[in-house]
Image 1 (tube, rainbow, N blue to C red):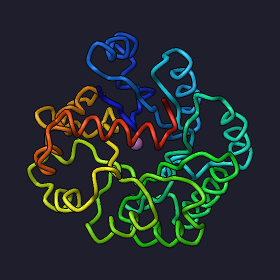
Image 2 (cartoon, rainbow, N blue to C red):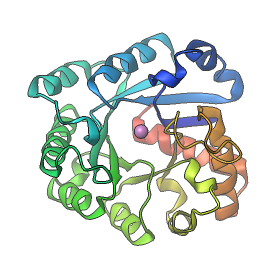
Image 3 (cartoon, rainbow, N blue to C red):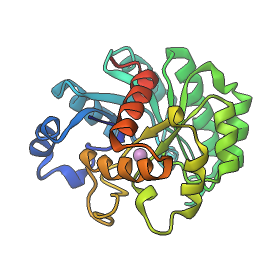
Image 4 (cartoon, protein in one colour):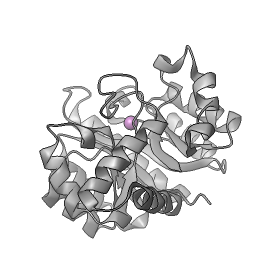
Length: 255
Ligand code: NI
């Protein structure tokens, strides 16, 4: 059984066949999906999906690249919505220095603001961190990361950075990139990360694993990531799926 810990089914690339695709997930072996918000508009859609499907849960937060227009009343809105029992995390939030905009100070301000919100509403955080390893670490350490659980989604850094997050008791999110031929650095990190700290995710519609690289991603493709992980960890695919299911249920507190 598959737990997709990070998906974006609100994305317009699913507009043509969303209900058909999501309706087919249980028969494809997908047991749980967490749909993750990125901008304010996507949060309402995320909540709607979690209402319409028993197996879809919601994470509410604003992605660093979408923070330019963010307002304090948006944070209040998220806080109000987060009492809904289907809301299981705050995210995705963080820092993205790959793009020049928004300004780094704006990204940092809203990252810290949403971390505060997460500790207030007592939900785990889903962290997006791209080309911003040191600043992300500094902010999390400063904020005292242990106040809530956290996952570094779509982990793309080195084994050394992984160690820093593991020392903070964080989970590491791994997806389709693990199956790519050029993912040597990530494979090295994954060899090092203990099995009980790994969450599997699609980040769909993005980052489809081999043999679907470049195509639209979907939750059942996690089976290919689990296969690759089982080779690296010298376990069976069933053992891997069992462990990552347990990790995700512990993390999101879904039974
Ligand atoms: Ni994402």
